[in-house]
Image (cartoon, rainbow, N blue to C red; front, side, top):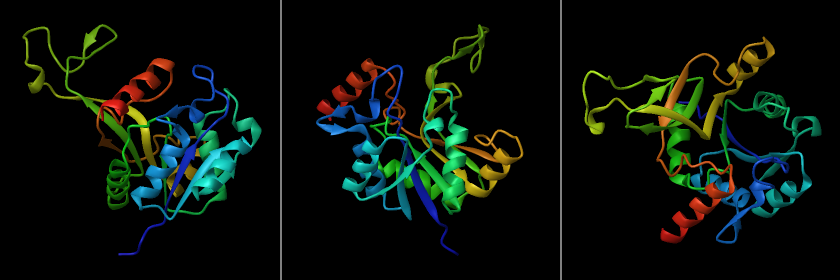
Amino acid sequence: MKKKKIICMIPARMGSQRLKQKNLREINGIPLISRAIRKCKEAAVFAETWVNSEHPRFGEIAEQEGVFFHKRPAELANNKATSEQYIHEFLTDHECEYLVQVHSIAPLLTAREVREFTMFFARSEYDVLLSVVNEQIECVYRGKPVNFTYKEKTNSQDLQPVQRVTWSITGWKRSVYLNAFETGKCATYSDHVGYFPISRMAGLIIKHEEDLRMAEAIYRKG
């Protein structure tokens, strides 16, 4: 079987509203962006690994860590720019069959999970692969039960899990993404979408100071 070209992209804006310069924040003395780069290299499944940012500081880090740097336009680095826009801009510049995006703000995602996700995606028929955490507990949406009923009490281990999308790691087939975006469709969820379970820790996303403190505590215990 022909080997597929899979590249990795790690997005990193310098600006962020909730946690300032979060990609440069450290856990055990290592910046989140550096942790992400190292786990992607350790996974050993990518033809190329790219850091995608508007800021030259991330270019310096990419060079130090031995990966490539894609400088996105400044207008795609503000709070109004969407992920679909910066991913499309990146994909127009880089030939590949599959793109895997790994977020530096998911520091507990492991190299093994990156490798297993990527290998599964490459073997599958999916055009999009989303990482999810299976929540096997009673869940409610707009005041109504999602995976349980008021008619009886069910043990949580017997419930159908609700899958929470985490964005820790995501994959897209390049041709499908570009076609969807350029024809005015939603590229993020284009065509055949699959779901790949990851651990609850891997699903922890750093958006607030308390998230960072939580990740630090887990690292100290581990």
